[in-house]
Image 1 (cartoon, rainbow, N blue to C red):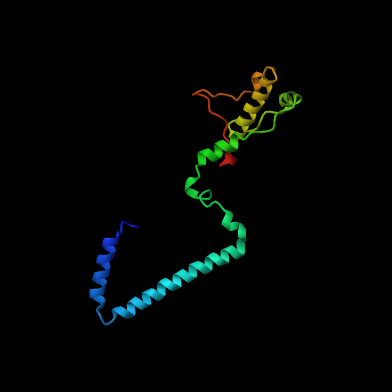
Image 2 (cartoon, rainbow, N blue to C red):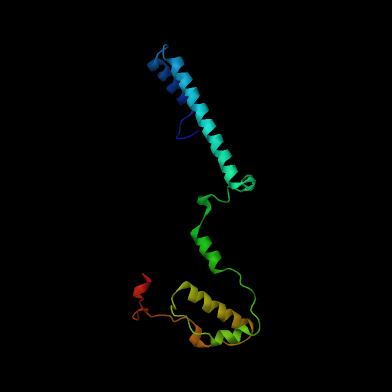
Length: 151
């Protein structure tokens, strides 16, 4: 069930409610409860029909488990976005990589990904990668550049 309420607990609550309400008012309350349940069912059916009207028949084909927000893992989404397969480079691409200027923000993920892609493309074609294309590694005493507009 929900919230740890079992059938036995519901029966105990029902018996206590019957004693508190009394035999005179119990049929009236049972009837109003039945009307409430019927109205709630009608409301849900109407909402379902309106949604089917708005979205169309393809709503029945939706995989609702795929849209469950609990399944989203931000690490997986970022990894998939960064490691997305790009089309294979043409033979002229490594020469263009060497002529490309170095990225402005050397510490950003996009810059690191661009550098790694360029290094992979150059090594796949058998060319040597110049040392200036590798990202700079800072020592403990040296601070990386600070961009005040990035925050």
